[in-house]
Amino acid sequence: MGRRRSAVSLKQICIDSITGSMDIWCEDYIKNYMGKYSFLYIIGPFEELTSCQIKDIISALVTKRMISKIHLNLLLHSRVEQLDLSGCSKIINDEMIFTIAARCLNIKHLNLTSCNRVTGRAFQRLALSLTQAVSLNFTGTKCSNEALKLIVQICSKLRELNLHGVKVQDDIMYFMCQVVQRGEGCVKLQSLDIFNTFVSGNAVIAIINHLPEIKHINWINIFGAFEEGLQKEGHFEQGCNVGLTGDKPCQLRSLIADSSFPEVTNTSIYLACIHCPHTNRFVLAGPSGFDHTGLQHITVLKHLEHLTLSGQHDTINFSHLIKILSELGPNLRTLNLQDIDDIDMYAVALHCPELVKFTVDVRSLDYANFVSESEVRVQSSRPFSKLRELALYSKEENLSTDAMVFLISNSHQVEVIDVIHVSAFNDTALFEAFHANKCRSLRKLRVFSCNELSIEPVLHVLSDKLSVIEELRLLECRNISRRNSDKVARLIKRENLDVVYEWT
Image (cartoon, rainbow, N blue to C red):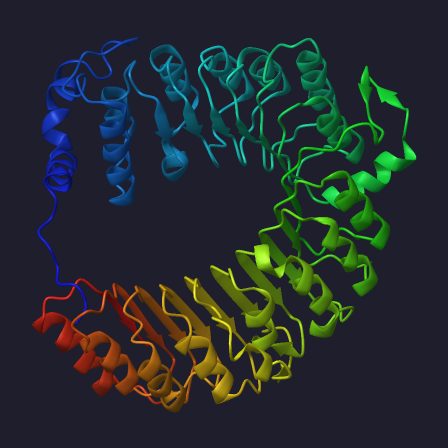
């Protein structure tokens, strides 16, 4: 049986009470002061709350769609260290930013995603107050060059800077490198998001060369930047080295290209892998221009733990990945295979014994072929024993029932199963798998358009007294009728189970 609903925590009761009574808390301010005076600071009913409590209240108000400028005026004070305003961008303007800049001088984590009503002038004023900032997210905003220049000079504790979609250019990146070369400014910056900006490959290489702790750069084609850097070896722009240097390895931990726009060549893959030996996350999903010979360079990444590959342009199939998996598989924690044909589940189990998350997405293939060439070789091993998340997405495939049984029956610690249009996810496979694996760690089961599945295996999981299921979604499954769905809903209600349930 799934977990029964427990009493709401005292903390949640307090938050619900406060957010449900905001009109009362704000009544005196609205009646006597709002519109009559302009206050730099306000000692109000929330003055003694901690930063975490303020964060929880704002989050609850956003979720309930109740947040207003009045609420923020009373909630913001000097102890606020975390502020996420991404969910209320419509009410964030220059006036509110000036208030934050004046009051929240100890802020460490600030998220202004999509707050595009804020002008560059307000960002410039805000930048002066961010001396304690560790993480800044300005995605989709109008943050100005002047503000960014102040940030890279003032924010000496900054670890993460997200400028996704901001109209930033090379000049700002070069300026940041110049400041860091002097041992000032954001010398501790580890993560930089400059996707969908005007930053070029030259500036990206300059960042890699001059920021000593940079580990993650999200840019449209990080692989192409290395190829550009090879051509610019020994060149400088505005005092910054924009060419590849071979005297020390790059500290990047991630190499990601997940857009179909850039072209990634075999040479650029080679250069990226050679210069970034510490990489633990490799994503190549969408770009064209490479083939299976280029992918073999991945094998030099001995610290790799997360691998995502796509065969979208018909340049690779699963047979091309066997050597990669045989060399790197023992260390892999996450494996995501997209649009790759001839996948062998048994080979994955054989070569990747430490997998925690396994995703197969072949929805772009009209017909996905699965093979079972390594079946005999994995009988003596413990396949998928550490798997926590399993996702299988297809349009039409021939995955065998035996392979599905093998996959689920061995995943004793699986917590999430997410399946779309996989015929092998059927009653026969599940009941046989449940005989070996009770799936008592399963928390989330999401099934879409699996027409060979009936309600019986679902009831089996839900009725198990040791089940911990908390989310159940059965969508567009032809053999699960409304009557079946009502039966599940009645069981959840009768037993007071703490399960989010959805059926269509």
